[in-house]
Amino acid sequence: MKKLLQREKKFLIFRLCVLALAPLGYGLCALARRFPEATERIYSEGIYPIFAAPLSRLTGLLPVSVSELALIIFPILLVVQLVRLIRRRTNWLRCLSGLLAAASGLYALFSFGWAVNYGRLPYAQIASLPVEASSVGELERLCLRLSADASSLRAQLTDSEEAYTPPETVRQTLSQVPQAYLTASYSYPWLSGGYAAPKAALSSLPLAYLNIAGIYSPFTFEAHVNSRESPLLLPATACHEAAHLRGFAREDEANFISYAVCVSSGNTRFAYSGTLLALIHAGNALYSADMGAYSRLYDSYTEGLLNDLKAYNANWEPYKGKAAEVQEQVNDRYLKFNGQSEGVRSYGRMVDLLLAEQRAMERS
Image (cartoon, rainbow, N blue to C red; front, side, top):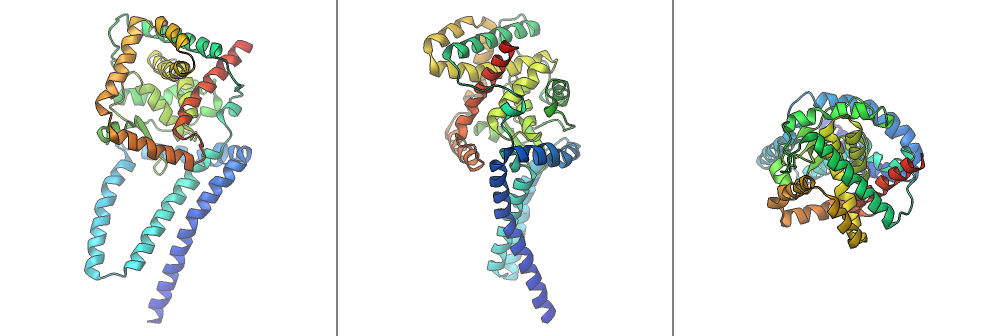
């Protein structure tokens, strides 16, 4: 009896220690946001790549997603365990404490293993980009340059005015992402690192109805891309998720990194995809700022470019609905919880980095 009590005491102490990890993880993330320079130097550039890169390559050995398999297996195991507990008439208070401890442990893994990256230096500082207030004229000039770049790249891919259909499969496209980052790292050394290629999500159909083009699993260090993403933006989406894998947590920064990697990759299809991503974001910003300027931008589009943009929109049209709206609200709260105060609107801040890059090029 005495040994049983001692064992129960040790078990309780263990669970209390695990429960304490959640507030510790939250506190560490809050502290990281207060000291971005130290976070950048010690964690994002120092500690994180040491374990993230090899673990990414380890889970990358499997052609399917480890995290998605876990999400399938875990509910089954949970139901089996609940049935066993009911048959044994287990103490439900003890069971609840176990579930809370497990949730605390998962949150701690998320915090210590990745979420600290939300507190790192802004990408503009890392890349020495002069982010400043910009005029509508600067934004229009950016959009017209992107339109011209997109038209030029498309002409290298096809001379057809019909919507462009890439010859590569989803898997072939994803396998090219590490090489794209390797090539881009010569210009952007902070993007280097031996990370695995993104994977096609097994749950692509439900993700499509949630309007999710890609998702990153910080528990298994796997970047996922929705296989139902438009083939035109598939490379850009893959490079976006690969940016998360490399420790760049902010959505707006991952978008800009995707563009920078794609256009520096030496791969024409990737360059076109990244330029389209930038053009869509910058064009949306111009539409909101000045309809007249947007009309001039629209007039600059070639017929082939217009057909490609229409094909991109048509690709997602069947999946629009209430589920996507709910997902956006959930994502908004998630971003705010992790220090992105603008929530889903932070996606639009990619344009500030594009303008800063343009400004840097014009000054050089």
